[in-house]
Image (cartoon, rainbow, N blue to C red; front, side):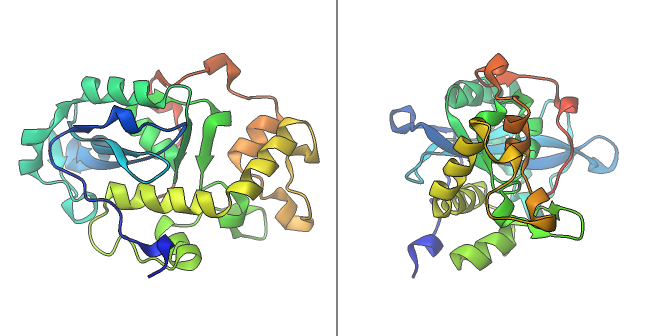
Length: 244
């Protein structure tokens, strides 16, 4: 079996905090349940944070701040009995914010996770596989994000999300995708941050040249995130809805 298709770590049901294993780069994934009428609104129900060696440094079920009307178990893997292990939302939010402070955050469609956590993170410290140009699908005008499942299959030879999602599995997949292109990714960021390339990846022409990600666009525009040098609690409505 390829090392890129090795199984993800098993997540314990009770909260886990392994702060001794923190690394400068962390991978994050969350699972959401439905709240409100017909369960159409999403709320945080589980969060997992991994270090760069794919070890779980934090995991917890989370009690949403309002009643759950749809557990979405077929996707989220969260069931009512898991709530007996759950932390209250504010505790989980505060602990995750402390973990992410001054660290690089890796994941897929992270705006969804940050929205669920009601957190900010500096854009220059985000590595999102949904926005990295080589992992996006080209279109006539620009590009669009691809599903994590499809990226894992194509680039890692790893089948994920067969049934309910595992946040550890999804976080590991995003982390491995980052590692696979890390040198190219960091060189592109460094070049854009220094003002070279005008926000476009070198060697691209035509439509491909416009497949710049959000982090490239923000860096090119000088939005390095220095004014928000650490993760912070925020209002969820400021994060735009995206794909997963």
